[in-house]
Structure formats: structure tokens, C-alpha cells
Image (cartoon, rainbow, N blue to C red; front, side):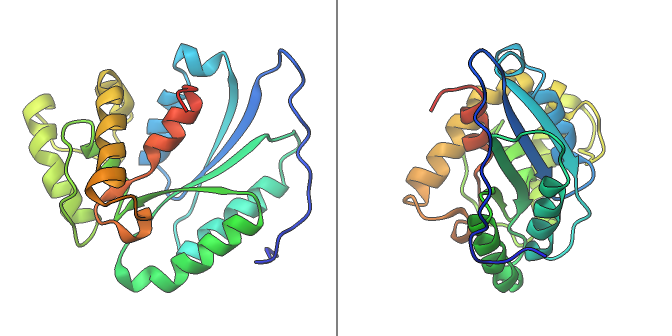
Amino acid sequence: MVRSSRLSFQRPRARRNEKATVFIYCEGQDTERIYLDGLKKIDEIAKNFDIKIKRGKGGDRDQIVTRAWDAIQSLDYQRDHCYCVMDVETVAARGSLDKAVKIASANNIKLILSNPAFEVWLRSHFVRSSAAFDNCDHVITDLNKYWRKNYKIDYSKSDDTIFNKLSCLIDDAVSNSAQVLECDHSGCSCQDANSSSEVYKLVNFLLKKR
């Protein structure tokens, strides 16, 4: 059972000339995993990191982080960095999200949030915008304007070519997302910044830009 007080475990340091190990737990079954599976294959990332990605089952925000911790505990290899990629969802989920933040902090898990949904990150590949959305469906409705224009089809969460479609626009997404959160929302936390996404922080870390 995950506790909200700090658990004491020590991650072995990666030995010299070895890749750092990164474990990423995704909230959902498809979209995040598809995108991150493509991202980890970028040469610059693949040569520096050994990345394992696990798909989640959704649920309340605190349940997702608890499952992430359970998955981390079951690993039979060292992990240097642990992430949980998930959505903020609606204002009504705030209590669950606050619990999730505490659990993650206590167990050395870095949260990578998107408010209200991961599709905000996908949208940032095309535009810098801090326009607020009520839920994921509303984000997708707006994202489809760009998806149809560029790919002549509607966006699908289970499209296994999502990363391939967007890979040439990653630098734009990083710049747009950083400016939205750090400038447009005056540096406030992602959970309070609708819309915004912290995925750029994970991308920058893997590309060793920050």
C-alpha cells in the first residue's frame, strides 16, 4: 500500500558509460503510450536512456499514482528516474489530484500533468494557446481543426502513427507549451493552468536540454 509519507528506498546510481533507466507510467491505454514509445526511439534519447513504459487503467488521480508506485515496486531492475504521465481532468477531480501529488512526492515519482488532457500537448505541436477547455472531448474538437487540415482525417486516440505524424513538430510543441505555462499562465502550477501541459519538461529532460 502506498503511503503519503516518504518511503525510504535508494536507487542505484547508473554506472559510468551506462544508460540511465527511466520508468514512465501512463494513465491511459493508448495515446500517451503511443506517443512516448515513438519519442524514446529518437536516436539522441535512445543512446542515453533505457526507457520502460507501462500502460495504466485510468481511474481517480490518486489511484493512478498508487498503481504507478505498485508497478515501480514490481520492477526487477534499477530505475534512476520515475514518471507518471496523467491528465488533470475536471475541477471536480481536484481533491483526488491533490492526493495524487502528495503520493507522488512522497515516493519519488515525478508527475507530468496535462490540463485538462494529454491532447493539449498534441495540440501544442500546431499552436501556442492557453485557451481553457471543459474536458478532453472539447480539446479533441479543437485539435481536430489542425488534424484534418494536416492529415485529412479525424484524430483518434488509438492511432499508432500519432508520433510519426508529429515528430517533426516537437521543437514547436516544447516552445509553445513552455511559453503557455511559464508566460501565459505566469508560471503557476499545471493543475491550476487550464489549458497547459508539462510534457515538454519530460521531453527536455530526455533530450538533455535542461
